[in-house]
Image (cartoon, rainbow, N blue to C red; front, side):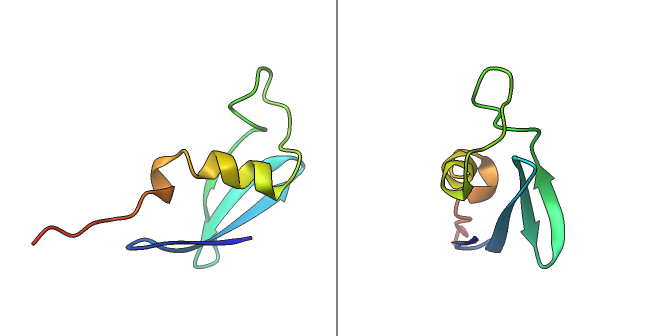
Length: 67
């Protein structure tokens, strides 16, 4: 799944054995061990659930340049 964040670029979200892997320009820059929002960190059910988590972390926030 591709997710574009203005000012940061286009990330690729992928699941690997239920763990989220976030890549930028072909390099993995962020990984989880299961779903950190759930007790016991079970694996993400699908990419939509993983994307919902991604939207809560700082990588998903738009970079705003100050003038």
